[in-house]
Length: 285
Image (cartoon, rainbow, N blue to C red; front, side, top):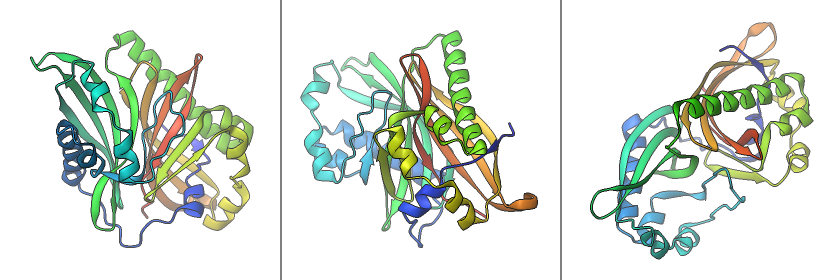
């Protein structure tokens, strides 16, 4: 799928610097981080579970309230295993973990897990894209983008996937037109972005527009346009879809600047689909 698009990743370059020493994560390293996360959850020890994450940590959903966890102690204090146990939960099984994007210091793993009762019967299954990040020599989960429960009919799955892709296309088209209002109309708020070891949130479209400057972004990179080389809904839920996008930026005369991967969590609110969160891997030449 080819799309002319303006892209927001430049905002991250201004606000959160990528560690110079960051190395590309391997698929096995990223999957192992997710496995450690699930194993720690099954210990029912909040401190052990919180230790598998990177901070600041965020877990966007369709109903995301904007909360970001600053450190492990804050996260551990928020975990209530009694509430989880009251659902009949005994343990969680990681059904699958597929690396969909990977690069400098970050990888995106599309995972599916099932919560089980003591007799092995399923309570429900959930779909998450885990943003795995390397910082200061450690590898952990920086964010969890929740597509939601895996219980859709095929027709609903196709409809939600199409609605999510259309929202991303609208967002990218707004960048192409440098239309800030149309850009934020294609988003949901509070909104979160993850990248370069950091997390940033915005409470409203007005706040978001106040922090973005198309002209300075274009001037700094020598950027003229971008193209979305591919776009794929990798996880589809009732109110959330994770869409993996590959984007290449160009200067004038179609001179390539760099390419990068982004996963967008697109969610539904009052019948409207929009981008709730995004996570981007560092650009490559």
